[in-house]
Length: 155
Image 1 (cartoon, rainbow, N blue to C red):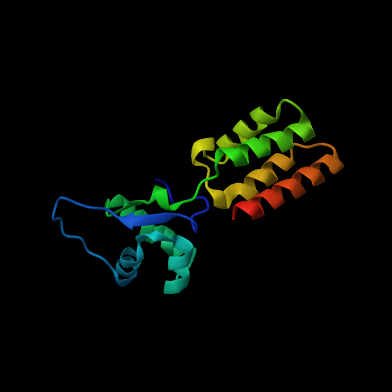
Image 2: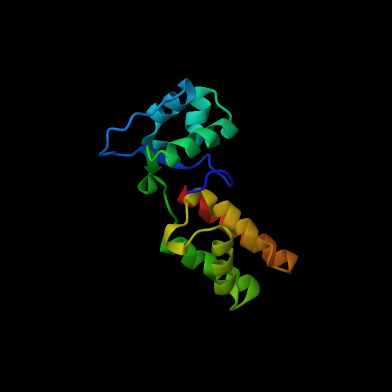
């Protein structure tokens, strides 16, 4: 997993179970971050609690991943359900027609996710990406308003 780029504050990690008894050398920052990784708190919360910049968290998480001391806690990240994507497709179809499904698939790929594992916290980003594909202003506004309302209902 590459944490050197992209949006990492919402990522959640947990300490990995290791069979070997290798010795590791930690600085204070690495140790404090490692102790906070419980599979529940996201990196933004950990950075805020520890008074760390996200650039510092990036470096520490990268090192801990390289040492295989942590792993992503996938189940801790909420994902959008099929109902959301059905609604998204219906709303986008009203604005752009039958190409909506293709636009959604392309946008999901651009964001590096699939429909089955799309994180809820990136829903607004997906809607923003899709609304750029709508040429008519009134249809774009209606699409965005409907989707913002749906996102609010989901959170």
